[in-house]
Image (cartoon, rainbow, N blue to C red):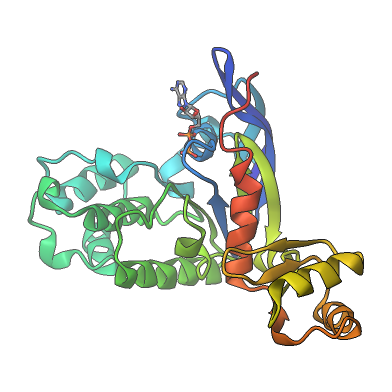
Length: 297
Ligand code: ADP
């Protein structure tokens, strides 16, 4: 369980993270989503004791990171996959972490196997692709057999096969009761992986809920033979809507209500459905578009 309460981080006159609160429950994967500069890394750094908060608290299994007796056995962290020492091999990197954590060397081989790096274990990390470094970072996070995983942009640099692999691994981890938070600046990258989303823009939480809740909140997608006439008819019926770039309309109402309003105005529909992932994408852009610069303190 991760609990973040009223976290704020100021750098001089700018506020990177402002009054952020959310929880991540065991047995679930939460996506921490927001555009670059939104405050994701700063929040995750405060959560893992690397950056002191200006105010507020963050706890993992009820304790601040700094107060966990052997943090690597409780929480696996990957904040910057590119930061691994380029001169060490993948195996050496994990062996070093294993000795710091006090876990047996055999665990290193298990983890190399689990992330598909056994055959590359003897190569220097400097020769790894970003996707391979992400795999190594995930192996490092899993070494101490933690109950909680905190991963900053783990899908960055991974190919679709790598993302699918990671999805399986994280879903398996959460299925065994693990708690996972992973950040991303791309909704499409994590949408199929996560159960819940915490969306941050300009240092503030702008949406927080299950994927279903956020999808339901994205309304109905409708397309008419006469897009302008349909827009006018639905607006005249008092429905709030937004034209999408491809000529469809996203309406804040159920499909039946939209269908009835269109029928009453004699508008012919060629598509009518609950707004899906594309709607969520639209929602993501809306939520973050106006808030993607950090607010002043
Ligand atoms: P994200 O991870 O969502 O891309 P960050 O948390 O890295 O965003 O950054 C949030 C904001 O805080 C950005 O405007 C960034 O420039 C600023 N910031 C982050 N770290 C520092 C720092 N050490 N000093 C000053 N500003 C910082």
